[in-house]
Length: 399
Image 1 (tube, rainbow, N blue to C red):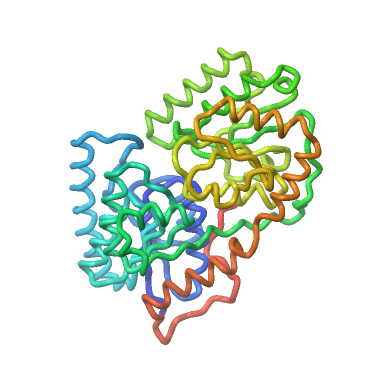
Image 2 (cartoon, rainbow, N blue to C red; image 1 turned 180 degrees about the vertical axis):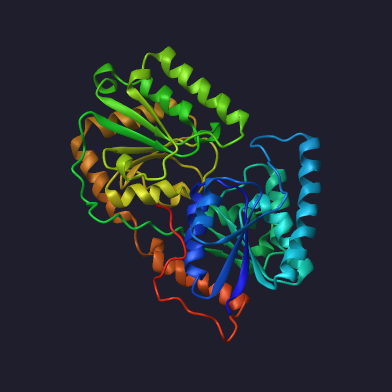
């Protein structure tokens, strides 16, 4: 019988980190039985249950983005301690062999439960910490983990600069590039008319939607009128801050007179119909990015990128090689990059070819799966009677 791994997930809807978790589940499905814990119900949890994966609820609660009040921080600390106790009991009662922590919000409860139950723990880091208090707490709790897996060098460095002693247990493992769907050509006929600018991700202020909208409004009329902006993504569930931001964005596009050129597509499970007509991907983040998964989805399709030089983005987007790099928060610089990209067919084709050539062996799904299996088997050797799935069989995937 396969031994169990308890995965701690900090949100129940699907984002980039949850897509990576699916890859982890499939990598370890040959050797281990997954149990995934969520703080609440949501579409990602429902999807895993549909795949036959056991889930459970742990009372972590919500933790809104941005600055927190002292009361919010104290409440979160209390809930984390409560979760640690409940998770410890579950680990011992179900003989869980390892805890896999998929995000910093569940890091304190996860490593404390693993330590109390005397089990190894892996912490998968998908973001870069920008606030001093956050990075201090994360680095302190990360020292209790058996291994830290970072999605980029920039993500790893955000911890190592504060606590260099984590170097010995930290591994940088790039997210795998999703395979193109059957029938999708890696050499699409671009650019289209009208040209489509795409932005993909959660609608929250750190992503910089407002910077992109302001940049488009600064373009020359002949360029601005020949393009369309498609925004794919939605506010986080139960986030008044994100909901307010979306309302302000829509009002702003209306005040600039470009609302008819903006398509608000919302959250989408199937991205292929949106990548096919997309000519340029823009990642205008004003916060820090671990390594946006959308980059790895767009580039194999030959979609060049305009991105800010934040975090792990700069490890894959190379200026005038596969995209254009601009400073965070500078709408004038972003407008200039858009103008160059959209008005020069030669530059566009050069960057499109560079984008297709960027995604190399570092991002191979086989490398990712092999590394994850190696980490898990080192910390939690399988029982002799382990049931083996056929090589390449998937536990669950998002359709």
